[in-house]
Length: 429
Image (tube, rainbow, N blue to C red; front, top):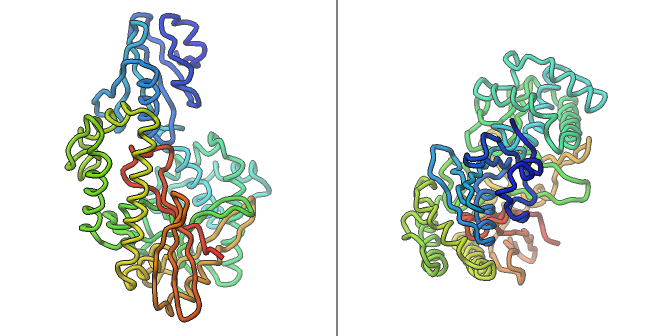
């Protein structure tokens, strides 16, 4: 029997975790017996970070708890409170597909299906009813490798907390596809979830692909937001910029990545009591080495003030490392900008489209950047006064284009996020 968290607290008066431990999370409990270990399930779209945050809260509350090594991709937390054993299992939100992935899949997949099947939905509900009747196995826009994910997206769409918004975004993307078709006949559209259509390299940043009647391909990178919001046009991690093991855009600089990682460890992490050695403190080569758990434990033992102090040092070192990398070689920096931000790929150009409500717009400052890039004579990355912000200046004669960049932790990971987020947020005027 699955009980809502508040109800299970009333049935088990011998365990009443402090409210701040699970505040903000979706929590349920599988009730077995009053003597058994209390099984608590937390639904999460960011399992690693949420598990670590809950463990930190337990530690701060003075509750004995630790991770339990299991075959799960995210090990559970076990502990004892008021002489009662409990186990907290952090599971994916909405089942196997996290909500963030589900939301982006709605925006990408549903317009492809609608175009292929010539659907003309009148509103969100009408759109959903039409989609439910589709046989995914017979769709050309979904490649065989992605059919299970497509079925899951359709089945779980209405469970998304942003269902209405994302369905409207999908209608906006459909409007874009139809406009392209009107200008130049499209023979097929493809969802680029995991598989890519023939002729598209694996590392291509497109979310959907349009194949025109003349055989040419166009990749479309999709963003979603409000009319006046500014979505990042690059959203990656600092280690990926140095070396992308999945074949995407990077400086292909393994030695630079290793140098910065060691410098960060020597300057920051090694100062924390109980920290494992450099080789595997962050999970090592696979990211899953058992020493990573000791690292998390050591970080959780720090006060919030100390965690923030160490994180500020870490952030400053990453920002300076990125600045140094971009200043090292003009040619390599321009190539990275071209492939990672302009998203140029051989024979498959990319357009960036922002869905806003049920409409769309093309993100055009990349065009300004693309026109200016071939004439750039000098590249200079510099820091700004704020902790997270920095700039890449492209100079040609008396002209300058300034690219706004941000580096930061995501989802509150801070010291427990071993590769920080890097964003390009647009041209700074």
